[in-house]
Length: 106
Image 1: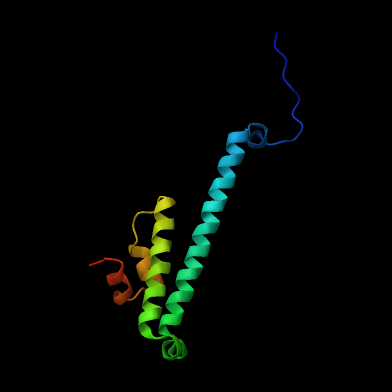
Image 2 (image 1 turned 90 degrees about the horizontal axis):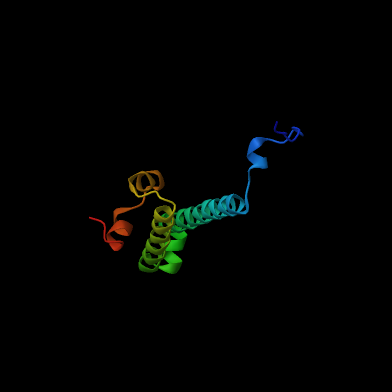
């Protein structure tokens, strides 16, 4: 005869969490947050690139360099998260060809 512990209303998922699964959830959460931050930085850099006031004050070359660096960081973060296809992000953000050329895209 075997004995079972009574069900105290906890879900089976919570009952089976180990130290590793908690750590894994934290790592996935941080990766998602980092991806969001990289996306926000890329969006901001691309917005500055299209802003006439920024173009006049900072210069097109400096803004292109900043946008390329931000987009590159976003691409790297996406790849670290397992998202290898960059075409959807290029289309969604409307990344200009001048920025993509700086990244080595053809």
